[in-house]
Image 1 (spheres, rainbow, N blue to C red):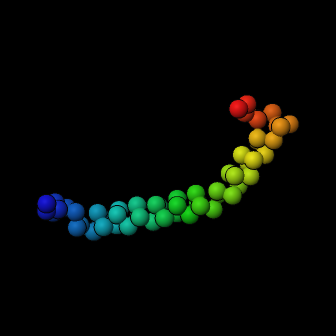
Image 2: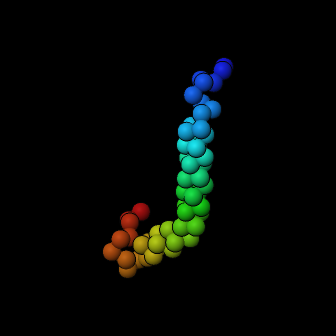
Image 3: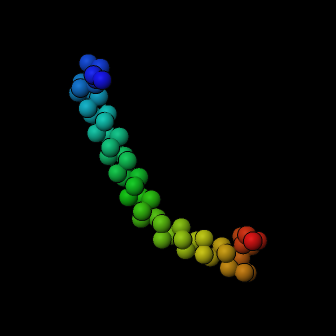
Length: 55
């Protein structure tokens, strides 16, 4: 399968690089926030928490 001629244009290459950069930033943000999310969930599941979900 051949790529369309517009695929290798400077605008397309720039957009591709921007998408890749955004993906990398999102992966980092998710990885870095995981401990805070875990702590929040653990806190919410305490027996005296109003956010506790019943099993």
